[in-house]
Length: 72
Image 1 (cartoon, rainbow, N blue to C red):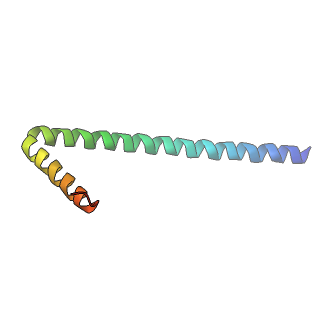
Image 2 (spheres, one colour):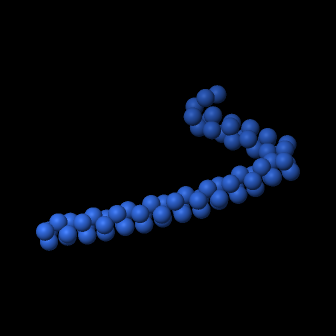
């Protein structure tokens, strides 16, 4: 009977640890989600403020990546 109680205690401890890890993952996810949304908002604002510059930067980055990848 004592072994059964110890098994239940260990299982409860594992459940608590699992719940703690899940809670931490959820908190981290929310934090990174908010940071990502903030970054997207900032990027969107910058693109709207400087549309020509944004297009030129995008073209430049595309050209550089194409050269790196071996496409001409």
